[in-house]
Image 1 (cartoon, rainbow, N blue to C red):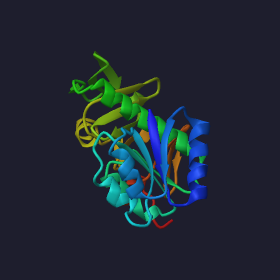
Image 2: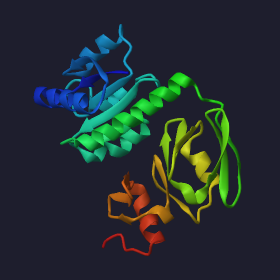
Image 3: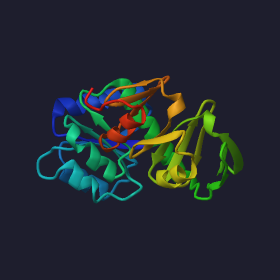
Image 4: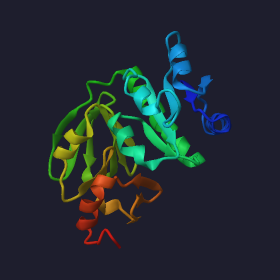
Length: 238
């Protein structure tokens, strides 16, 4: 899986390339200081993943991402948290705030690799077969899996797919997060972001920005905070 970096600050660009090399086996195909230079490169080269700064001269990262083909994956890298909502509207794989932490970068790359594999395998036949009050039956990897709700820690949306993170495995099926959310009981699951639904029984702790489920950390979306805090009887202003 190859990638390019688009970042107008030379030092930040070099640091990003070094971090990616340290946490992954991705292949660097190009490095650019502005969007027009990257656009010229993309005319003749196929790129799987773009690490994209947002505030840049000439053309912003957001404007550039709006016109990329669906199969080109994007991880935004920026110092400005106010662009997070827009990045999710563009179905970016992830949104990394500078200074970028290695573990956070590694998770973003893992998500990108997973979705890239899904596109390559074309798993469009994976669907929900049925659901009951205690479990959901989904088709994944050419098999039907009976998944108990109690075993699901959280569900992650990846564009046209969802990943069920259970206590013992990950299951991937082709549907959007909204569809599966309608199939599972509200008494157990809560939507906490554009890309996440969590099992409230697996929550160990939370603050105004993050939900902690053991070793997993789930970002709490701004527009979902009020309903989430209300569920636990906590004043959002505390």
